[in-house]
Image (tube, rainbow, N blue to C red; front, side):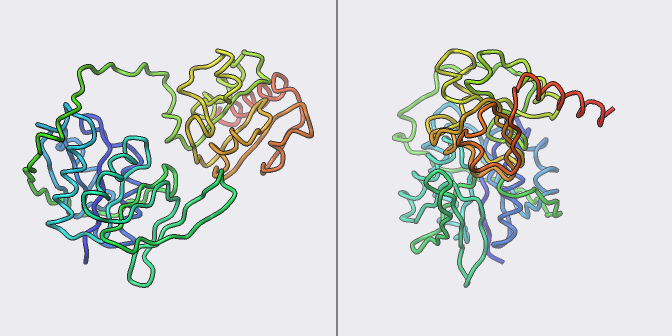
Length: 318
């Protein structure tokens, strides 16, 4: 069975859920092989094998960890040359998309970004993308080289599928040109106790209707175990950090559930959340554009609706 390479997203061996999603998709195409770069493999190996990794390419972080994405692209390019995989799957973050683009150039291959589905079709790799702010669904295939595909988080549910997890040590040759951009400082991201916005299964977002008071939004998010997002209007007003902005100029999310609170639904915001599986909106304006795409809508004051919902969720959990 042909290998499918999956780039592991991890921090010191703590593997991100997006990697398990990629391994699940890789099993549809062939035999999943994880590419693990850096330290912490002993911690990561059991989880990678549990989600189907038949092989784990262990790559030391030397000459890689202290630089930007080019060394990673070179590692993958060398593995593509030696393993001739059916495809290479990478998480569709800004980091992952740059790696994918550079890898496609290095291997003379086609690149598909922001896929929401990957499958085997007619002996090749077919993908589905949601484009133009979710207005169109596009099916596409790579016609040249090795398919390089970046996949949006939450595109599939991770499925456990025991793999051998056989470790193969790899010592890549990193060019001097790949070391042109060096990381000079790292700062630990402040933890909120909530999931990462782009990876969360549930997102609760607030907009202009909050008038700057996100307490009801945050309380509902905490009750649901959700991430907190914000519209551009809210972040431009200084009510919430720009890192939480959902929209065309912010982050694109595809959670299982998206709750829009006091958000009118301008096209800029819809471009960032329209591919969510289920959408709920709370807005006082019954003619707000957001109601055009929701699965469930509540016409009402978010400061009256959200506390009731939070209380009911607490009771149901209790």
